[in-house]
Length: 239
Image 1 (cartoon, helix red, strand yellow):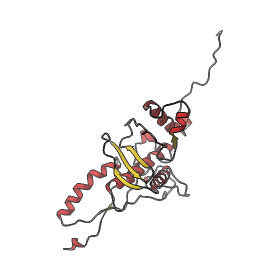
Image 2 (cartoon, helix red, strand yellow):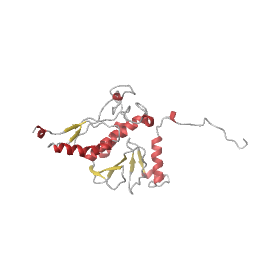
Image 3 (tube, rainbow, N blue to C red):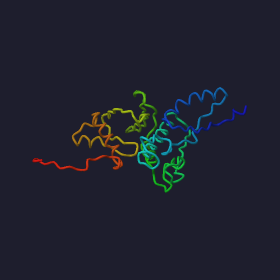
Image 4 (cartoon, rainbow, N blue to C red):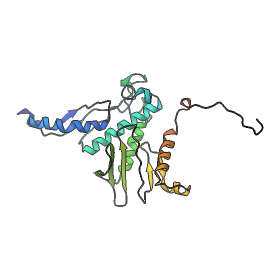
């Protein structure tokens, strides 16, 4: 009947939990549609994350808090990577720019950019991913990884790039850089050259060194008002 003419099924799969949870939603939906004779692809025509209302405020803050903006960026990037893994034909990120300037208004904080056009961490992350893909062919999932760890791979004639992420902020994973690895790059474009670590006298493949570098990277740019200091003291040999 009329359903035979359906070209695609449009979804707005907003969620406040892990973007990867969308994958578990796809198969049952496709089965239901096929029961009605619909074999059209699923399109994500609107889905984004706001830095106000969509993340854990107690942990990441809200609105324009740098922690909230970084968290928004991570969730947006994970959404895109999830769609790449599922081979979604079309997916849309809401929104290109913030709709307003109120940091407490959820609808004002979905943008990849501010109202003035400045990149937020979400846009920076997408630019980093696009650069990593350029000139390489998508090869899909790397399967021999622990549960909750996700790895997508791109290859060219001369190299390969892996995107690695976990689906919970509390998960700690030890990564060992393969021999010959040229660099490790964070989602926001920060780079770490393995050769420079060796030059400094450290083992780039040592799990402890890799964990330390991740912690250092997270602390860079951390708001000073969240730190604690003793106020200064004097140490002398006779006192």
